[in-house]
Length: 244
Image (tube, rainbow, N blue to C red; front, top):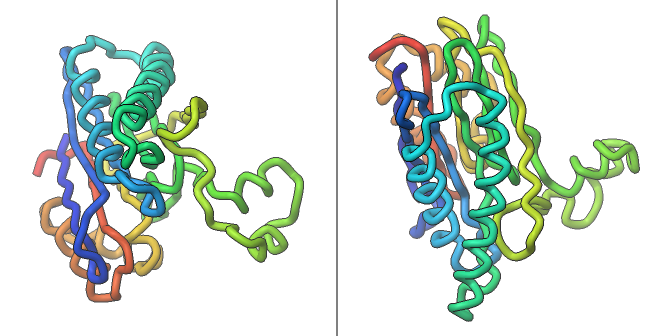
């Protein structure tokens, strides 16, 4: 397994509320995770750092090696972390509304489990086709998925892109979890929403297909996003089965 990641404030911001990490549990299963502090809420950088570090250290201390118990663990851990963020906010008034999105992947032999809250994203490049594995939890998408409105109408709503699920603020932490094939030559890509605001799928796929080590691909992803005027923090994680 080869993993590379990098985070950057972006070309328009000085602070970075993204946080990223990679962790291995007691039986050698790897988790990669990206959290993006909700910018409109004070303390987003605290919430994102808490989420990655707490999820990561909890993962390192377990011995899960199969998918079903891992999914149950993720649901339980999301609740634990949500409670921790809320309690931290109750202790410090300036952090009372802090929140973060999160997307993570747990790697198995030829499968990957994806879990997310919010609009941080997971993609898979398979047979030269780039597919988003996660669902963006934003207002327009949630309304369309419930069948309450057509996509075009929902896109014209006020606050159509407002994040509807995250860790923090309220007691509901409805993490969406799915499993997918992850086989030889596939490339997994996790990111906050900053990169996809400025780079289209064609460009992202082109970078992922470079004949370069993963860390160079990640660097180029960040660099090209910044050259395009990335208005938000930018974070990229790439994972393959091959060793760099």
